[in-house]
Image 1 (cartoon, one colour):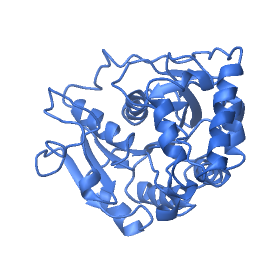
Image 2 (cartoon, rainbow, N blue to C red; image 1 turned 90 degrees about the vertical axis):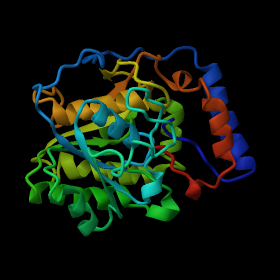
Image 3 (cartoon, rainbow, N blue to C red; image 1 turned 120 degrees about the horizontal axis):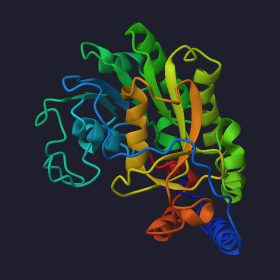
Image 4 (cartoon, rainbow, N blue to C red; image 1 turned 180 degrees about the vertical axis):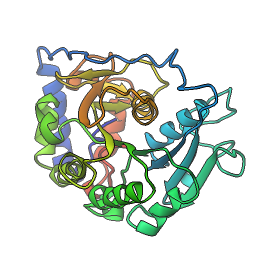
Length: 317
């Protein structure tokens, strides 16, 4: 779930929760997103029967990054991952055909899968970033960074992505997809108003880092790469639905698995329609805050409210 809220304990958390619940209950209607580029996961064709790419994945042990790894392998591609802790790179869900079990390293590590390369290190260390590229014939990059602010610092996204861009140029890699968030850059009007409130208050530092990261591509050293910045609405768990809409209206929920599929399309499809762009995506779950408050979101948000803000990964990557 995007913006897994975690204000300080006590009255502040209870008030924040009450505000969000009241907002979702009182909202009479939400804008209907305008689908400009619907994607269908099923039936996607490979570029060529014998074409195999190697995708570098940064943030591979996160809930979105691990889904990118799974789907890249599912498509027959190879992956080179950077993780802070190798034992945290586990399958995000069961997959019978690939003999994967959720939360397990079985068939999801270089020891059991020769299509995987895993580098243990930090995206804040340029040498570790270079190791992901060295000798691996990287053809595309997916950046799905996240983490607890107190562990990774307030400028992880900007600093880490700066290293990734430099490594891309040093190794001749052009294609890159970066997971950002609705509300970043010029997409604030696409965020539900309750999220706008949070982004301008308790999440301000995180949004500053997101905006700085995007700026590296929009008017910085990454501007000459074939980039796509993807701004998802609320992130949810679940298998791929195959429905991804690029929207210009208010954002709603999307499964991480569908976000991962979009990211892979961005770095694999030679005719991808959204290069040199920052786009907001949703699925078919409606729009606005109401679309996010379903399934296990309510109980998960309650758990997050019990944790200090500095301990959280608000974007849940």
